[in-house]
Length: 277
Image (cartoon, rainbow, N blue to C red; front, side, top):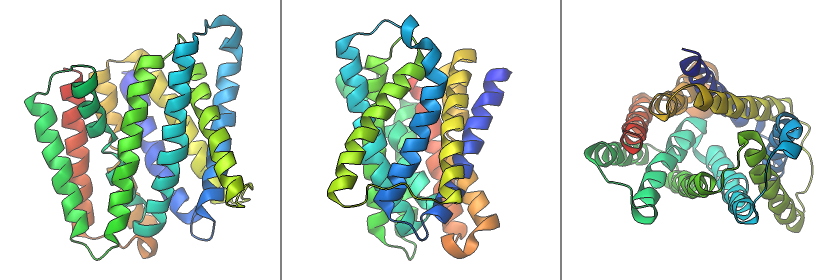
């Protein structure tokens, strides 16, 4: 029961993250905003992992995989996600990034020799159809493509995290996040955007994202993947609903938006179940 509760909390917090992120990015530079959010997430993760640093055995090969995962997830995918949010809004962008489940399944089939079953195939078709519905709206289609690219790199990061995970989940996450933050910082400095944005919406967004991640890890320790992953992937639908209720002027939510989000979520749930039967 606690595993289900923490899964719901993670999904809710990730959904709330999208609302505050949209508000925070309204007048902020995307790269500086990304640097701000990732910095806060890294700090919170470090606080949770510090007590386990001396108790965890390090392996160089696994640390390298976690570092690469962090670069893909906290740098490339996070920047492209936030670019997509400024273009098409959180509801559509988060539905697009939920393709990480689909790409993770594809990578598993091709690189880990996992089985492609009907659930994964059906879920993939639903996700693609959901993204197609978004493309028929009066929005910048490049935003959908950018969100899907984010999903690709999130999925690739998941593959590396799965292979490089240390005994302690929080320490593994910290290694990934600090690696992504360092490369993000270098990139931001080349763009003259290496600064911390004093924005209350970004602060709440980063905090909800970090606590959502922590809730997700607690859920994984208490319940099977078949329960945790599908429930936690409700977040695009939560973001869409909250966007309609609170930031309709920024998001322009319509029937197609709800339908596209619903199909993307259903697809991700089927794929998640298919990956972990």
